[in-house]
Length: 360
Image (tube, rainbow, N blue to C red):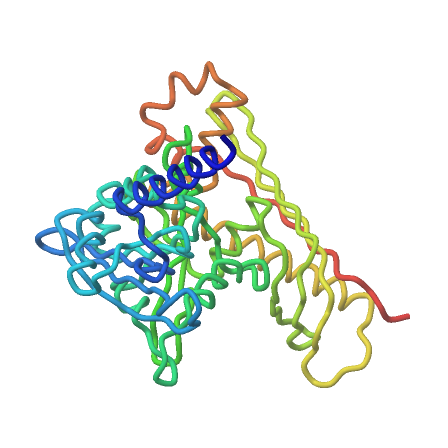
């Protein structure tokens, strides 16, 4: 009886292994292990540029392109040139080209959210130009590693001039009541790939872009500014400040003329360098540095607000969402025409910078 049971167990194991092979199971070495995907809209559909590892054991990477009437068809067509099935679980990031942003990212975004084999929690970028230029960029004759490109999404934590976004962040930004979405923009130049600006959207279509300094103003207002360097001028010369412990807050109130929004930003800063080789600063010069630094931040916040909200009608600061949560009755009447109405609202910006005095 014991021998019979062992024989039956072995037969079942063999049958299971054969059935798995019959269902099309593939080993990792038979798959295209994707690390990055670039999508450009072309006349007849989409051009995808894919970066993948050479093999599970090899750290080298390859670059492939393919076209199709949809993003998924273009990716599936990669098997025509590689002989391998695309595998998305190792994917680091997605880059959309300018052509996708102009026609609307909803035409090529759904696959990355809906398809069972993709990871929606990956970094997402917009390219200044084509996504293919970014994904195929070579440095010193070698393809730029996707892990290096992924790190650019975290650079805002270091310099305070770049946003970071995952696919779900972007979709939520589009669908959230009274809000607009943003994405970091990549530029492929002669020396490398860098973050060039911040794109903002009306729905799924790009409406404009913030400069790096405007991006810092946006991050400060949204309480997302962690650190960065700021240079201010005055009788003290040129002082370089290292910003830290920034706090941003947006408040809303309704008066007789409509909504009023107050943006408050407070930050601390260390003096990292002063031109002229001065060893000491007077108390009055500290006060002047603080005043100039506060004015610099205020200008960056106002510039980002005036361009995105008042000129391009994109609510990247989430003013409408604030009304939706705090004044739901008002929002029900204002939401339909909010993108036009918000340009006429009142905005107050208050900034302060405390410079740490380390000299006696």
